[in-house]
Image (cartoon, rainbow, N blue to C red; front, side):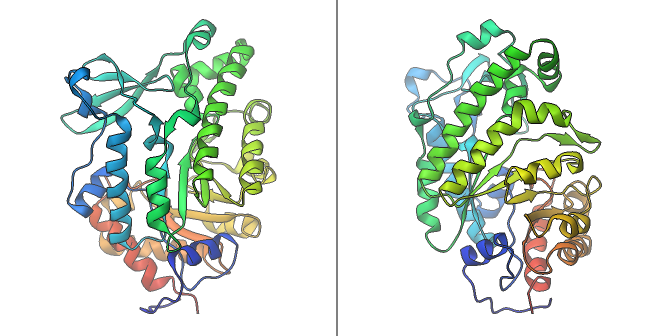
Length: 379
């Protein structure tokens, strides 16, 4: 490893070479940018659901897709300016055509999958607070949208802009996370799994079917990698026992992997927390990669040694302490730690250990990328 200004591969060649467990010219680097960083990097404003607050629907021409298409263009611009090795699209950025948030009050709305969000306009933050599917009757009444009726312009324009220069990752959800968010919390879904399993199974099935359809539409539009973003663990371990995962959730992930592989698309599983108790299960389902191998919960070098021949790894620069509060040298040191732990032989993509959230120093993002380019060159 050493400094080299002459990199010989395109971003896409570099990224896909690492995914295929081969050594590219240098360790690929990417990250998930909170919109606050996008705005700082491109010096342009993004928009969110707060745009619709206190507006007369009859006088508003835009829908959520219009806002997300604008945001996606800015995200792509930020990726280019940073020199990252991929483009991202997301199921958070596609909505049914004509969709506008359904407001409960001036600061709270229900989305198209039954999740309830609150807007804090003073700090420009939107966050989940509840779900509307409380009973089997609620589920029967709730009309899940048809994925074919969504507007995928943000995906199409990103694939077009990426061309043969960049790979496109589709960050999506499948069975776990949106199920417990629509239900009103993971505690509610846990109760259902044991006391009302038919209700739980039906809810998980409808959520998964909708999400699978969205992913399929994204694959049809040319994405290269599907990143399944459901969080299923904390630092102590998985949210559910292995038998619950196997009975209720894994069949959908296995089906997704089969569908993606049939269409020559890779699948990466994301989850924070300690995945050791279920990692063998996840790999047996056919996933190609894992993110982020959370520092303090899992050990990157250990995962590389034990599983690196079977899956590629993406991560794991510390976004809890180092990226928000660390100095430039702290960031460079942590980048070197990650590269030393997992880059040998290929199969490693350097990224943050979840996302570049709003508390991360924007300057530390630039530093992370710079050190990756300096230190991550293969010899």
